[in-house]
Image 1 (cartoon, rainbow over the protein chains, first blue to last red):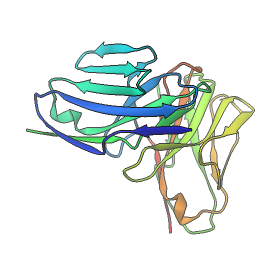
Image 2 (tube, rainbow over the protein chains, first blue to last red):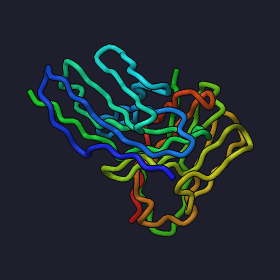
Image 3 (cartoon, one colour):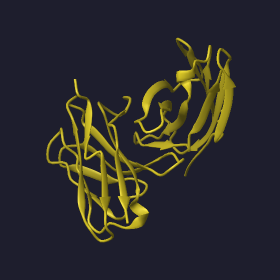
Length: 109
Length: 112
């Protein structure tokens, strides 16, 4: 079966750091994706992890622990434009993505 | 480069009506997908295709049909619209089994 859990909402202050957690249970796990989705828009790709460890890409980093079924997305130097939903998605061996419900991040001045 | 395009952007249907949601990609991707996203929820896979002439069911296929006659196009058909099909529909494509999925802008469907 497939199950993805992430917090529904988070609030953070402009300039700060925020960590969005995701736990997953996926048969035939084959990678973990993070997507950003602004209100009323399509999801856009942020990061991909298939091996344990941290992947850094500018202000965004993503971490994966396969043994714990756990990932997080780290956003540094938060900007107002980072207010969006962040979707965690686990891929199985058949390249099918199972999405979590998304974490709505609100960045306040 | 247009990427993934979807039409229409918004549609209101009456219960029992039918319609086709269009999806086209110009990246020569073999894999294409249809998802629906209910308000405040994640995306659920409806159907997917691994190449022209090949389609398969996803997590929530009931009430929908698809076809894939060309690499570029992957239309989604609703035969008898129901209020439960009110949602935002996203089409996506990827180059292969380990590639990122790219999403279209979505179609907002309201069934009354």
